[in-house]
Image (cartoon, rainbow, N blue to C red; front, side, top):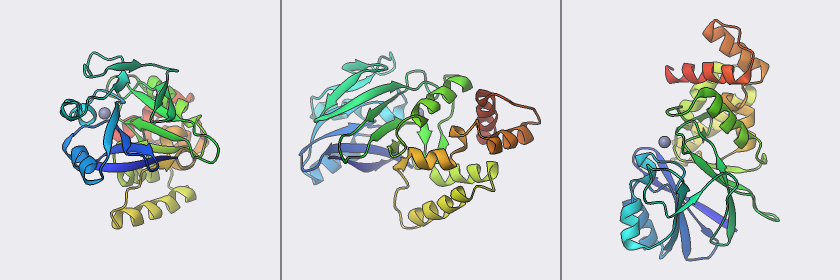
Length: 260
Ligand SMILES: [Zn+2]
């Protein structure tokens, strides 16, 4: 069974460490900082066997070289001039076998043009796992820095089509701020109101709100629900326009969030 553990870095990053239960070999997703990873490996007698990267931002890649000084391991990542440390480039549909688990690569541009996600479909009783960097967040989504709103919307829809039970390991603890915005968009959403209470309670005890699930996001995340009447109505009211297609609704609420 795939076990996934958060290593905290910077203010609010999660570097996800994964391994087969009981194995000493592990992988790390997006090591923006090497020190907390090296510390965790030593404390837990683990051996780093692989690094996987979702996109080029420094808080996801800054620790790669330092880790490679200690562990000579493959680095999987997108075909991007901005990440020279990648040794194994992957693209849409690539299937990679890592530590006994198969991950399928999804290209999800928008936050950056090189952004990819890794999806482990799981077998038998295991739960599917998604590493999605800064694209889908618990209750929200990443800023659109390099792509376009329609591009980011399509990338999020690609993730929304994954199995509902999929555990979503995003790279930041932004959940309460995201849910505050979601509550402004859909104040009548009772499932969202319940979620806000649950996530606040976790944070009050210092517990991560991540992973989330695709199901929870489909129920409460406005950025995955741009075709729903309540989101369209809120986007129209806020923008003072009559928006029809989900891509436009997405653009309106993403712009709204940027100035929220
Ligand atoms: Zn980023």
